[in-house]
Amino acid sequence: MIKRNWLWDAQANEKEAKQILRNEKDPRFFIYAGMLFSRNNDVDYVFSLIEKRVFCQNWPLIKERIEQEGWFSPYKLEFWQPVYEKILKELKVSGVKVHRFPDIPVNKHRFRLAMKLRDLRKEAGYTQEEAAALLGVKQKYVSKLETGRVNASIDALSRIANIYLKTIEIVFKGA
Image (cartoon, rainbow, N blue to C red; front, side, top):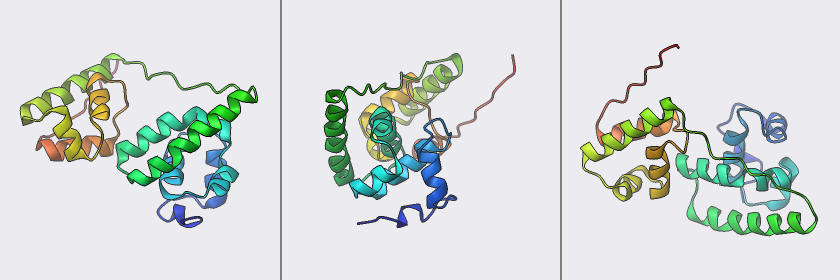
């Protein structure tokens, strides 16, 4: 069981990571939460670092990021998903409300990128299922990328460019 070694490649030490995990608005929250849940299965230790309510509120996005980055082995998902469901029930029974993050709104830039990614996949001759297999993600993630419902990371875009053998250039113009 990996307990304290989950930060082996992180810039923060355990104390700093705990502060990040206590503040879900910290821009590094999902990075460290992803590392924590993909590298650890000690429930007591994990919940000494992150509140159960915060875990339940953010689990769908944490899980999505972990899948997107390819950090999860299937047994970790099989381990944490039932933990999430059990704690979510416990919190509801005790009257604790768990608010979930809304879907990311699709703005014009995200929409253009989504359409470009779809076009690149089709030009490469892949179905969403084939692209997902090559990227090491689920088909659902490719679909979300191609509809702009998920924020594509630079790492994900790099992998996509390599698999499709294309160059992806992103240009932002002011007003």
